[in-house]
Picture 1 (spheres, rainbow, N blue to C red):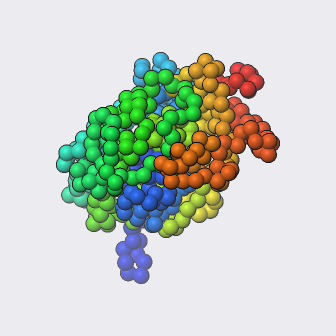
Picture 2: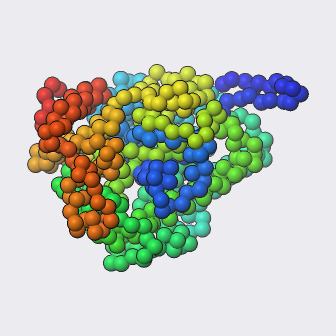
Picture 3: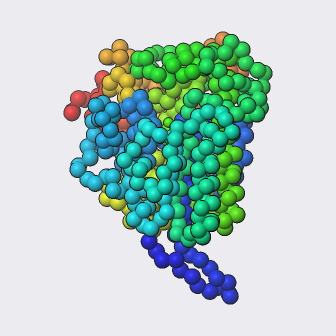
Length: 489
Ligand SMILES: [Ca+2]
């Protein structure tokens, strides 16, 4: 690590040292839950303040999952900076179902905590337990992990908030000057979404274990991409998130979805409050200006959009993540596409702190985008979901265009969706044009806000995106091919 440099400038002592990191990771949160990404209902003043004083990335994604527990590969990509098909084994449960290429490299000793420990940082972590790369998690010097989703005064997000405040208090008392890397993971807004009573009241909803038959007027409206059922099978039979979420189960009716959305909002506003306390504490310690604050989630989630409940799909609501970064040399109020995966964060953190990027890392640093030198770090984004029937779902995005392909249920489902996200950001389908749906969503789609597959005007674009998808699948060593692709494996 660089030594702390102290020098005199016009008679003032100036400290120049490695920056601190406050890495905030929520569990299952789509970008459009935040006002920075267009939400007009949920209030998150502290996250908004991060966006105003930092940069918002519009095209941030997780690369995907080969497991129904999407958290697990996503969080392992964050910890290792490696791509989906090159992850280390993370335990017997996952080994049974996964293929991967690790080239016998020492990945564990080049994970996020290992790298920052070696660089002389004090490393701290609080997060939910499980569905992650547990050997790496244990390498943080201080670990306060617990899955905490209850609504008591010291449960849920308050519990995680308390852990980091105690860590910072101790640093204050000891007058610790070494920089810190703090991993602040929350167990929410992942279900079960037990909300605090004051926040539930604010959003007009209640904690329930069974689908409710009615909901208060103040409850958030159904999302404009809401459907009572997905148009075809999602490809993962008996998937827990689609059939067994308490308070939702298989119901997708208006009352159920509005109630669950309100519970989600209550959980996120609670997270926002905890973040406010932590930022205030850093300010009081005089550490805030030298701290990179990063806000993101392990992946998005549907919560009623497209008739789905879970995150095991590749629509934007589930594939994309929020990503906001504030810190030294980042222009306040800036915005860029970024075209970034979560697995790019580790090399980014290394570059921001002057630590060499380990050879095991496969991601790219986002630093040029954060410092306003460029708009994005790549042109094409590739996404996978194959935790259910194989080969599963694949997506590719370039600019405004996106292709999603479904090859599931032993060939029974073979579907293609082509979207222009500029004109159809919610990925609306022809089903969203029906009067019954419009009556609920209060949204009348434009004619082109539908799946453009099959429209001869876009045949050339379709072929270009099909080619891009196959190119990306080969590039990232995807071990599967879809029905209409050459089987070159
Ligand atoms: Ca998750």
